[in-house]
Structures are given as C-alpha cells and as structure tokens.
Image 1 (cartoon, rainbow, N blue to C red):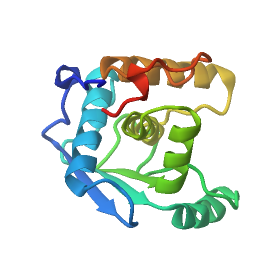
Image 2: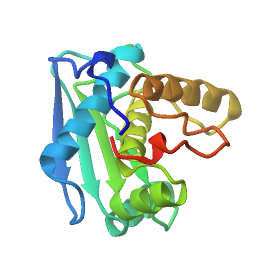
Image 3: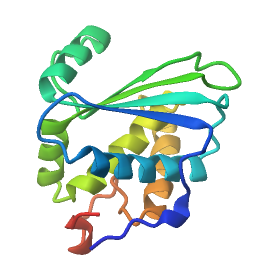
Image 4: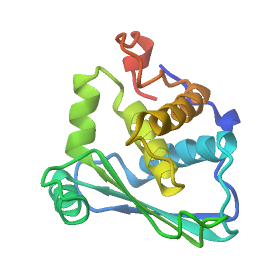
Length: 180
C-alpha cells in the first residue's frame, strides 16, 4: 500500500478548510477530510504560497452534472471536467485571502480517469486537490512555460506524498495503483 507521509506538512493553523459533499458515491466525510488535509498540508509545506491569516479555502465534492453546468457557465465548455477552481480574491495582489476560493471536483470523472490511468482513486483525488489549490494561487498551464512550472511543482508536492509523477508517460508500478 502506498503510504502518505505526514512529514510533508500539515494544513496551517490559520487556514480554514470548508468541506462540502454535494453528491453521492464519494468516500466518507472523514476520509475526504483526511485526504484533503494531506494534500493541502503538502501544498503549503512545499510551495511558497502567501495568504492572509484566517483565510478560507472551500472544497466541494460534487458530480459530473453540477461540474458540467459550472464548466459551461464559467468556462464556455459544455462538458464535465475533473476539477474546477474559482479563485476568491485578486490574483495580482501580493497576498491572497481572506477567501482563497473554491475547488469543485466531479466524482464520476475523477473515478473514470483513475481507472483509465490505472491510478489509485485516492492518489488521483489528492493530485486534483493539489492542482486545484495551485490554480487558486495563480498557477496555470495554458502556455508551455507556465505548465512546466505548475507541473514541476505538482510533481514535487506529490512525490513528498509518495505519489508518482502524474505527467510521466510510463505506466504506474503495482504499488502506485493501490489506495493511499
């Protein structure tokens, strides 16, 4: 079993995480909270993200139907996607907060991608939480130079959690296909 190290960091005490489950089929709230805290702890331990003390980040565990509507309304793409990030503040400011933003995940798409990629569901979900969080802080991957920076940071964060590089081309090992 792939172990997630708690040494990679923990969610800062001055950051509030609001977790909402809007759809059936997700793991328990306790399991999602544990995965979210591991992912976010690793992000804040590895990346140099500046935010106002007392800031809030929202994670919404939803489904393809809701995410498709959001993707259509906010991005002009009438299809579901795995994760959407909605920054809460001015990305150009020197510090983010107090509302860092919302990260919305689509269960069916996350599950399908994990199965298709032979990746453990938990590992893929952690990756998407990391990915979504970086978007809240202005990281992007629309142009190659920005993608290299964002993907490199994601890879470092995930490596600290014992999760393989999601951007490599070779198939995962047997250990990487097990749950966290």
